[in-house]
Image (cartoon, rainbow, N blue to C red; front, side, top):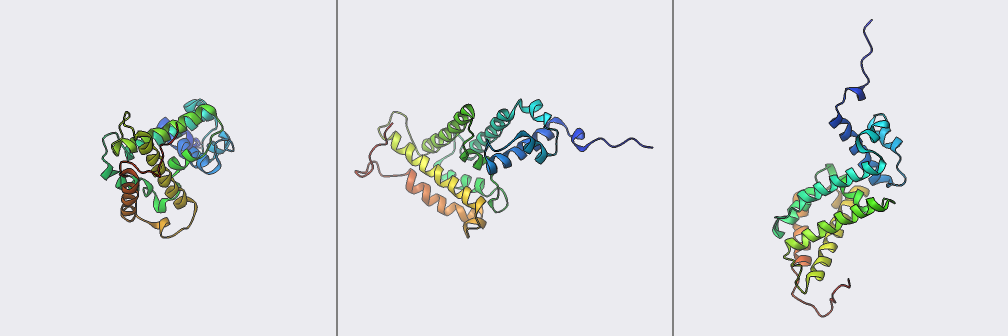
Length: 211
């Protein structure tokens, strides 16, 4: 008799197992939120032993933070430090359509869900703040300029719009948004960013945001 074949999970290398756990965790955290997700849920979805979460990520919190780090990397590629404002609409459109029909953009949606963990929440907010600051910098924001807070606010509104697109594409059958391609989205995003991030120097009906 031949020996039994090893369990598929045992044949996977560490990198493959980490990838399975991260993918399962992103889907669970994005769909159910941090508090409602258990490590058993994630391990079962990934098809691995639950003990491997502690081995590779120390804890559920560690796994959540690893998912957020993935979001940092992904957003960083969308708006890098040297990107120009003209390049941003296509970069965002590509990011929003990099999965079929925009379904389950988990690295984006995970940033919209509160974790219930103070340290993880701080990481989440830092990511969102950093991305808005990059958008504002691409639009010419200077930290010591009198209009710096106004431009940062506009960048945050732009960020909210981009996340809204991702959320609607993932959670509804709203057409034509749901099946819009990268090329379809570039034009509207170009108009949106142009209107928000290249405003006139000052407007009497737009007070400076309070600190």
